[in-house]
Image 1: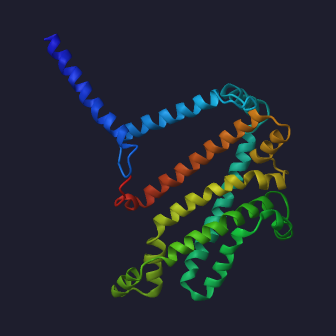
Image 2 (image 1 turned 90 degrees about the vertical axis):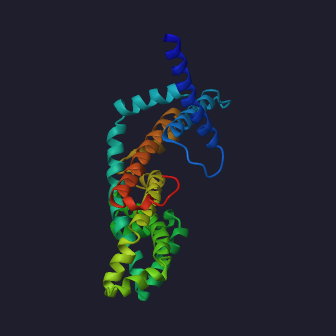
Image 3 (image 1 turned 180 degrees about the vertical axis):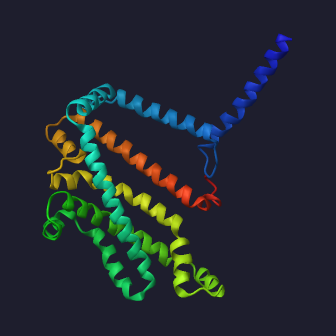
Length: 282
């Protein structure tokens, strides 16, 4: 009896392993779909590989994981990293709110031909360097936090408008014609086809451009250090060549940015659950 149970258990384990091994092999073939379990194993293995390479890095100047952890503890407990993070996070969220409001408004206004040259001009602003515009924004909004928020909003808006205006311009004509056959007014057509019809893509564009704010954070907080922030702290540590502290702050920014990215993605799935119904990889 025990032998039979053992044989049955062994067969079941082997039967479970075979599909998983096949899925892991499929992960290295194009256009294959793997289970969440296989994906978790792959992610864990890749993280372990990165840590192994890091621990055995030939560059002696790079801090090891243990040094980064100690530096993080020191920054958090002794130098107020948590307070600086809260300052930067609040500023970043404020800038995101203004960016979404301005960018979506301008993008939807492209349904009016009179506004298309304005939106086109705004989109070309992505070629401008923010350092050269600092004086202009200082005259417009003053210094300190308003200046940093304005720089962040400009840096994200020019890219957001470029992507979202393209989404609106690429709406197929048949969608407009279908709405008109339902006897909708032009205002109703804009609401249903342009605003609601592109909501899922608007979330995705917002999600992609929200990361720009964290990339710009160090620069804008370096321009005006009156309120501090993790960007100003990062510049200070980098100036004194404290690499362990630099890595600790960078990993913290990465972690918070990933949480923000996940949150926007979750909100997209909550508001637009239909967006992933026809996708092969969900």
